[in-house]
Length: 411
Image (tube, rainbow, N blue to C red; front, side, top):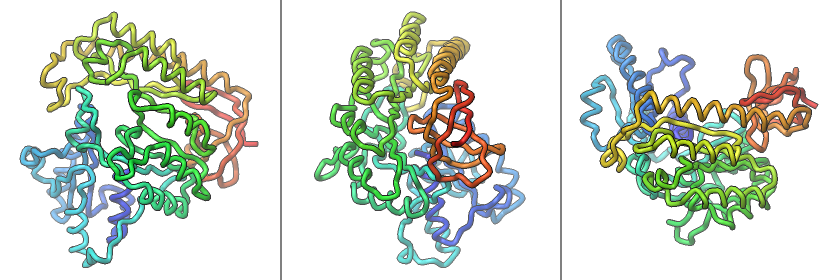
């Protein structure tokens, strides 16, 4: 979502006459787009802002903006911490910065039509719903990004068509809870209807969406994913825990048995579907037995990808206010490492099954002399080739596998 916001802001600044600086030291305007989902992300943004203080002293004409989820209602505190920063803007609240740039470049607001985001790779992010109504007890998103607000289907369609004209081959539909899309719109279109609409866009070859919520993924959406040829067989479905008591404390709205049933329905309807999940370890009160149930869930389901994080209290959330962060940091790190080791073995085995197989890769770019891209199942693939391949669908024979990527040759 932050990458999508950055792309939108970059497009608006370019329309105002700005150009992307090749080096941040040479920029006239520096923008830090921040995330507050975990403390480590906020710490990185704070560290970068603090490091810019010296540059600001040397260059009085330099403008610095902090945007994103770090900017809440307590802006005065941020101003005290970072007095050298010129703008503090909440998520998608870019208008004051745009007006400032327009005044400097003498471009009228009436001459500006919000453009689609800049296309830097053949895969483009398209937010379809902003905010979240779930209020999971650990999550800061509803407090920083607000309640759910869906974009009209025709507006999304127009953006996708414009992105394809600019070179995009794949779109990734984004939402904090993408399965809730449309419930707040007049005709209440749902994600299945939107996917069907976008599936007909000429030149678009792949559609992805994330992130889903287990309590909101219904049969209609599953059937639509199975039916539409451009929608990839890859589902992101955060479990967060394998223990019912922890899930209840998290406010997730489902139990483990329901989650397992949903996975079974997905695999039955979409053969070969690739599954990714998110897990939080060390949530307040999580015992070793409860953590063991999370490991069992991961062992049983065998996800293609697991994103794991150690719990960190986010000020303002229910968990931070009412639950004691009683799992020691060292124990959180041990549990996190145990999940990572388990998943490395599972991913190794899953990817090894692709050895010698032919896979279709959407090429995203070049890195260290090799082309790279992703399969429909979101597997990262590298292969050598002397010709330009960016944006192409290439058949690749897999010659080596690892937990993280595949290596092959183009056919």
